[in-house]
Image (cartoon, rainbow, N blue to C red; front, side):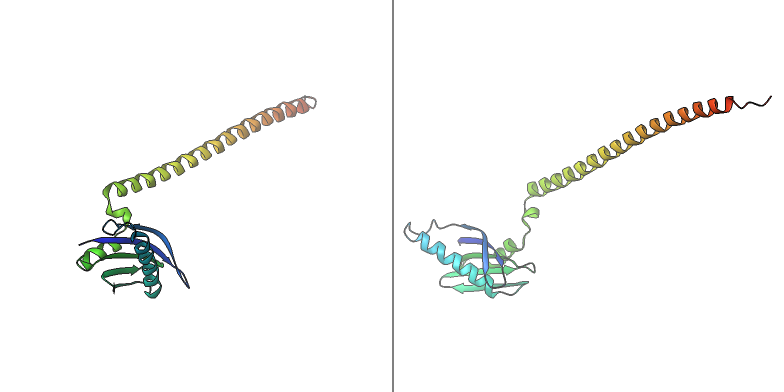
Length: 163
């Protein structure tokens, strides 16, 4: 029971692009590893190109079983394993959201989300504080203007007092 390759690909209109791949070629001789890796990369891309969106498939290629899943957003994943590796395990691996698979990753994602929300809240508080400072400055200016108006009006009215 051996897992040889796990590849993530983006299925484009005409061809698929390899985004990330991991290989375990330790069971092959040193001189075969590069050609086997190239074979696995080519086979993964070809299988993703030929698989329609939202479907899963298993393809037997030589002594390997290739399990593929292409999501509706054109993101595809391919697991290449030997024939003894359970198909259910492969598809469970392909279906998992990596953020939810590991508890620490999930907690870290929640912390990052909380940090972003807290940062946005602090920014809005600072903006409100600046607006309040502007309002205080404007009210002081308005108060000074009203005092000046009162003094000017008093001087003007003092010359015209009725006896």
